[in-house]
Image (tube, rainbow, N blue to C red; front, side, top):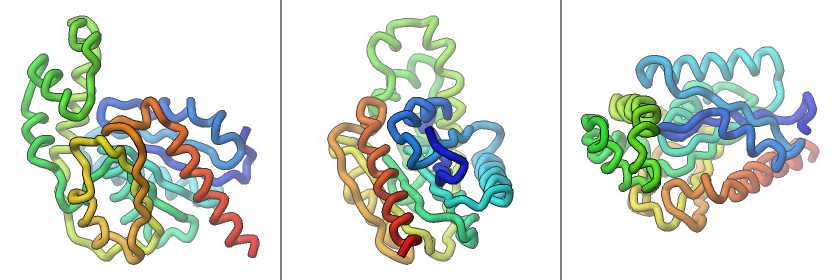
Length: 235
C-alpha cells in the first residue's frame, strides 16, 4: 500500500467512466504512487475544469508531495486544461494524456454529431469509439440506466472550446492504441504546439478503450515516470 509520501496521480476517466475505476489499479501500482479518481461531471466543461484545478491545488497546498495528471479521452482533455492552469505549480511533474487528439482539433465533428443524438441512435453510433458491447445494446433496461450519464459526458465534450495559450512547461506523455479509429498519428501532430518539450509518444496494442483490458501498460508507464523523477531528485 502507498505511504503518506507517495506521489499522487490525479486520474480523470473517459466519457461514461467512473473515477472509482482507478481504485482497481492501486494494488498493482503498490506504493509507487497514490491514485486519486477525479469526477468529470457537475456543470459545464469549464466548471468541471475549474473545480478539478481547485481540488488539486487544495490537496497540494495541504501536502506538498509530487503531482501527476492522467486522463483518458474526455478525461485527458480535462487533465490537459487542468495542467494549463497548474503550470505554475512546482509539485506538478507530468501530464499523461491517453486516447486524445491534439486539443486544438476538439471537439471533433463526430463528437459534436454524437452529442445531438438520443437513445438507441446514440448507443449504436457510440460503436465507432469501441463503446457499448452487443450484450449491452441488446438490453433496454441497462441502456436506460447507462445512457443518460454517457450522453451527458458527450455533451460536456461537445461544449469544449479550445483557446490558445503558452505551451506547457511540464513534461507530457501521450499513450494511444494502435487500432484506435479515432486517434492516429495525424491527430497527435498538434500536441507539439502545446508543450515546451516534444511529448513522448507511446503506442500500445488495442483500440480506443485499450486500458479497459490492458491497464497494466498505463500502470507501468506511471511507475516509470515516478521512478525517473525520484531518481533525478535523489541526484
